[in-house]
Length: 299
Image (spheres, rainbow, N blue to C red):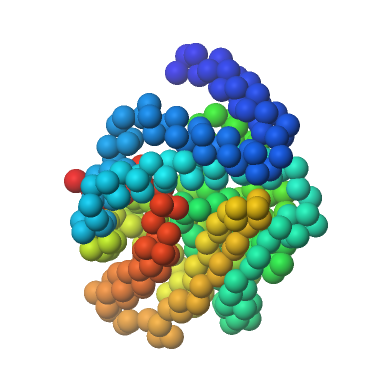
């Protein structure tokens, strides 16, 4: 677009104003402001509101409509809280950030890393997923996180700085398979989100909440080639401004790969289904924490 650079500067200026306001508030106050922004988004984003409601009805057909609407509204408030938390938490150095952390199941990451084949650290747009990545670099070793660059280069530069300030690195999503393979070959850690609808090419249909969902098969294919296990990772905000980061049990690929193309595809599908089942299980624990406004299912 001809006016894109001007628009980008305006967006970045507005972002800086919001960021400055958040830094002027206590961290818990910044989170509360985020909840307010999420409530405002619920009121004005009619199309996205309908997407969230439709997704929740599909995933939880047994729930009464009032509960569905309550979960959808709360998910927008929590999304706003997560966004503002990520910006507000920039005030914390490594020592202060670690002081605010409660880690659960960290031994799962340690065990998977000791396996010696590299590790996929898998997460979802659930809770405070940006904050969840930091403990890996702080307590284990830096990981390479797959991410799509933002359309606005000014915002993307700032987001990259926030993501890498505790040692993690970023792999650009376009053509990421090659970069992920390089990391795994040196027995490194790869962070990736797998809960959103994948683009045609590497996508396969896997059940998610009982309905086919187009999902990337890249993680399973690379896991089969390298032996890399997947460790599910999720992060949540605590009421006092702290964080709870949870590592679930590793998911290991089969020790031997199938010797036919059909057999390999069956293994890829089965492994991807296990990954997605781990994400679904976590969402069911805290359904309001997931980003329901994404068009996950093709209808």
